[in-house]
Each structure stands twice: as structure tokens, then as C-alpha cells.
Length: 421
Image 1 (cartoon, rainbow, N blue to C red):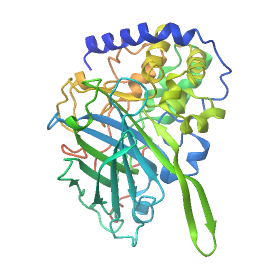
Image 2: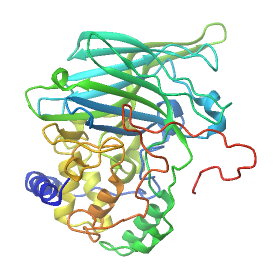
Image 3: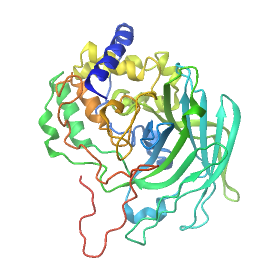
Image 4: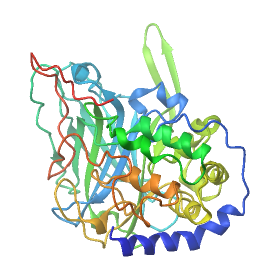
């Protein structure tokens, strides 16, 4: 967002959260600095459950029509193009939950849940089951096909988008290019340098400018929802967090295979980028993924977040900024639907940028790293690149679902596989 609007938001966050957060004191920080800055592989249990491992979540107004809100969850990162057929499918026992908050607190008011039928063949579409619940009451449902991925052609299959005539919701599910862009290795080195020199660190580690996620694919579920369907008592303000959930009990037998029973339990969740991966100590990462946004707001994890930031040398004011984003009303992306979103690739005007929701092209880690490092790269937003990875490796599309088509196997004679590690 524009510098003046961003300063206003950050000032509000500081005033509302900083004193309360710091007043709780600090807990033991632990070994936090081995985690990645993206949500990919953010905790031990979900790292061993790739289909449920959330990579990123996004929410923004459709730049083609601001009367619609886009919600995106990506999962199962780092799929190489040659494995598009083997890995390019959705687990049938997994529930993707889009939790929407529209009353101004930390509790979801509406959930859109997506599950998938079993895949019958490598080149067959899966049936997606979409259910809308207001509170605990089912209000609508529809089905849609997934987009089939393939590893046999140089060109990916075009995206299949379904619009439900009853609700007006647009739906997409399939393999895409991973829209996240960032240099993980450099950021890990920078965090190490912050521990050694709190508050400043060694920014030269970002000179390598390599996109860790370039050349890789990810599984993506995206929704295009009419604003009128999701507006609540908070008016123009909307919250969004993403969950992947599995049944509470799973039984394996030789004769019947796998049988799932019981209510869904979240195994991964995400709102604001980097919260679990950077600020939650390793022993509590699985607990955080199993937790809830209401627990965030109740202060269950805020002492850990403060301890992590204090170890980095982050100032009281900047601790308050991040606490206001991820603690005060839960780890939830917040979108002001009255701020117009315009431009190509899902939107590019500065007024609608993160932390006002999150678009696929927003350089969110530049913003977060800058706050951690006491805004040494600009005040309050970076005046120039922080990690020198400032855009995705592929061009985002200009229509729903806005992400790029997946990478395909390279032709004979092409030795560059597109990765930049």
C-alpha cells in the first residue's frame, strides 16, 4: 500500500498491541533459526505429510472486478515437472478449509471446505466437492473437475475454471507454478547474522538473489467469491486463514486399506507469512499448526513470538507491528475490501499491497524481513529490494486463478531445468 497508508496501519497496530505483548515477558527462545521463511515444511509432522503441507495462502480483490474476492491455498511444494503425473493430484482424505472471518474477532464466521474424490487414472480429472458453511450450518454446495497435470508435453493443460451458477463462486484446483518467490538460504544466513549483531545483521548475504522456489510446482485450490456473500458485521473488513485437515482417526488394514473416522483436525494452518516458520520455536511448531486463531488472540503463542523477535534485536515498536498483524486478532490475513485493487497479474497498485491481504505478486518477505531488521531498508516499507528476489520466475496471469501454469519437462537439448538454488 502507499507509504502514508502503510504508516497509518503500522502506527495503529503499534498503539493497539505493543504494550500488551511486551507486558507478558519472554520465554525461552530455542532453536528457531533453522526453519524456512516460507510456510513450506514449517513443522516436523506436516513435513512428513506432503499433501497436507500448506505452502502459502492469499486473499485479494479480483482486479478485473472488485466485487469479487480471491482466496488461494497452495500445498505440496517443490514438485519437479517430471513428476507432474505422479504427484499432481489431491489427497481424497484431506479437507482444504478456507476460514473467513467477517465480524472483527479471531473466530471464523464462514468456512468453505473442499475435498476430492479418488483419482482413477494419471490422466483423469478428480471431482472436487465444495461446501459452504455459515457457522455450523451448511448453506450451499457444488462439484467441479480438477485440472489434469501431465509430464508428456512441453505445454501444460489449460486451467479448468468452474463457476457455480447458484452461488456465483468461481473454482479452480490443479497443479500450478509455485507463486512464492524468495531466497531461503540467504534469509537463513541473515537471521544468523541478526543473532550475532542484533538489530542490524549482514544484509550483503542477500546479494546472491536466488529464488529458492523457481522451477517448481505446487498444488493449488482457488476460489472467486462474490463480496456480497462474505460481507458481515465488520463491513469492509475481511479476514482469511487457510487450513488443511485430516480425520481424527485413521485405520489401516490389509484387506480394506485405509479408513478414516471422526471429525477433521487441522494438521497445518497459515495466515500471515512466516509466523510459524520464523517466530515459533521448534518444539511448539506442530502445536501451532494444530492450534487456532482464537488461541493466537488469547496469547497462547505471543510470548514465543516476542522472544524470537527480541533475539533478533527487533525494537519494541517493530515487535508491536508484527504482534498486531499475527496476535491481537489471530494469525489471519486482513483485507480492506474498500481499498481498490488494480493492475495485471492479480493486481499491482501499491495501495492494495500486503499487509492489506496478500496478492500473488506481493513481495511479502521483503516487508517482514524489513520489520524484523528495524526497517533498515526503508521507513516503513523497503525503498529498494531486500532479498533481491523481487518477482516470480514466471509471469502471473491476468484472470482467475491468476497464478502461472505449471512448469513442464524441458525439451531435448535444454539443460537448464529452471531451478535457481
